Length: 174
Image (spheres, rainbow, N blue to C red):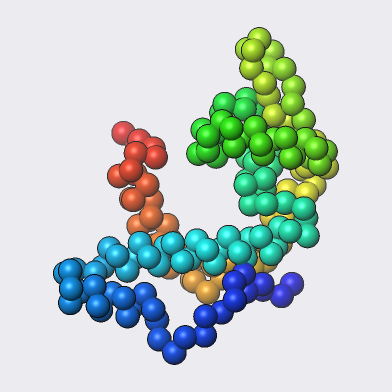
């Protein structure tokens, strides 16, 4: 599989974030955090575009793909919608929208939650499981867009970004 570029290459003869960092340093002071934050935002654009290019032929967006994989991770293949929102770190309205699309495509279904009379379970269909597996294989084939990094670099990057998420309160390791 050819690696999709994801976004049109800028083709600049210099790194615009590095250049901004040099100017920032002269005008405001230390530029390390600004360089990293700006780089993270640019890499997010690149990754989302690459994911879209890989997932589009499967009829998926990244948000829908994440929901399918989350359901596939569940032992029973189903989860309460509220728990899906927490795990996907999105607003309940977003979960509803994602589920509407997955149900319409025959990839998931809604079921009453027997443990909660008012609750609703999202359940993965066999077709949804197959599509999640195929899409995952395609994303893995491009190294989730990070195939330019070694395993060691991936570990370091994950560790640093994990610390940012920890400091923001995404999770508690105590």
